[in-house]
Length: 283
Image (spheres, rainbow, N blue to C red):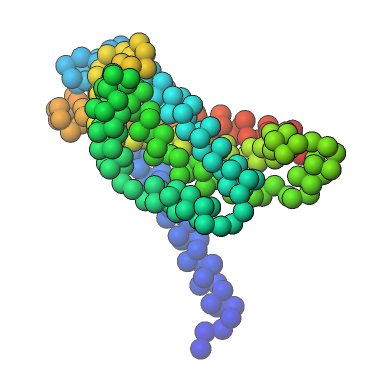
């Protein structure tokens, strides 16, 4: 028989191995991409337009399109997601309606991204073509918003649930209305958790490819409005690597992947710093 101390040591060792394995795999993937792509990244690569289907030139239009697309998607999805979470936690009790809404968000979370792309192509690109102008940034952003809604709703709902009931009771006892309590007491306390959901959503949409190929258009031109077609960095590296296929194109794809990784790192770092400031102010 194995003693209790021995079993604890075995379990602890297994957990350490699992943890280090996860970090090692992450570092291996990121390290390989950076090793292959860092020598491609220079000022010309970041500021020039792509040439010959992306196998030459830079990625400036795709960087701009990625920023536009991500911001537009968050502007559409965040108010809806946070609003739905407020409705579920503050204005409804556990019942049939609440269960239906939660079931809907969970079902949306399990849908493959290509299905979202087909829906976006059929609805936003074709049916709403007079409004969205077909393949465009707005069509892609609306599709991306439907993809990240489950993440925003669930994370925001859990963040709102962590706010103690005494905060609400104290605000209401002082004469504040329910809406004033939500805006000035509940939301500031739950903001770190909501920002976490936004960060997770950014990671989801900024790396999406399949759904955007059907809705965003894939144009290499610099988008001048939300009704222009565009190509994000994730789309660009996939199309250049898979469709062009030359050695030079593969190098450009690794360079694009390097810029994408650095961009995600900068966004996550900035969001974490903002979240820490909010936590420090609220404490």
